[in-house]
Image 1 (cartoon, rainbow, N blue to C red):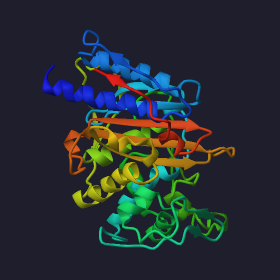
Image 2 (spheres, rainbow, N blue to C red):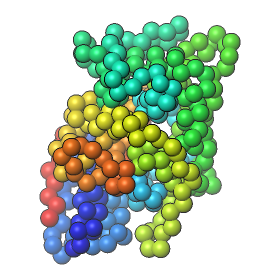
Image 3 (cartoon, rainbow, N blue to C red):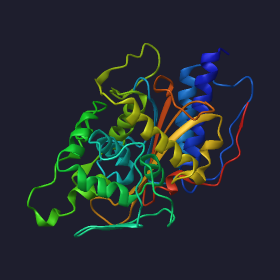
Length: 351
């Protein structure tokens, strides 16, 4: 097995582990590949990913997508209808993009520190924070790792009407990705001026709790991939690896210092933040991610999101944009983001 193939297999194995860890509830899955059945090509790995994704979702309502973050090739997909035919509020999964908009607007930088009072309270909108009370003042990366609602709602207040929308549109939120003729465009629209019923619209949008911001899972996954891989926004394509041709829809300019803060925050979410109980940081890979919980546009039961990206292990915890390998999205209906990233750790044997 070549070093390059071993790397791909390792990252694919991590994705399978993602899929097992991120479903709830799920019985432990043991994969025992003997030497004569280890996947030896991309098609074998894709099949293993698809089987693991289907098993991980089991009888839960939701969707799982595994995509190559460097090409947009979809390597596994469960429940295509929910993956790109329905647009939903993303909840806290939108916060890395709120962070990018706020960093671009110079509302804060890596040296900024903010004390969280434990709750954001607006005119018609109040939202508690889920992290522990009395923590030291947050840096932007820590606020992202802990998914601090106060931090990002107040950033939304300060961003104004159009700045977050402009950043989201750069990542093609509100537009079809091109994966299917049946996909939804999603919704990205500015808050209405002078509408008292929309008094907290900017704050709601900044934390993903506004019907002004609705995304499909495939939109969210392609956007995250571009955010982390250096700005390359690919068209997602369900295709085999043979003769695959990547299609780059756009190349988004993302300042390296802004990317570093956001990646640090997503790494913190795995290590000590909202996704810590999944223990993904114990794997021999560099893994970053973000959880999200949001109410559906109609109804009261929340949806749980998790988006994760993996690359080769580096002791520094850095994630080279060119070496981000796999991107994984899990959406569970009637769940919370923490449920999408937490389950009893299964026993695995990969040899």
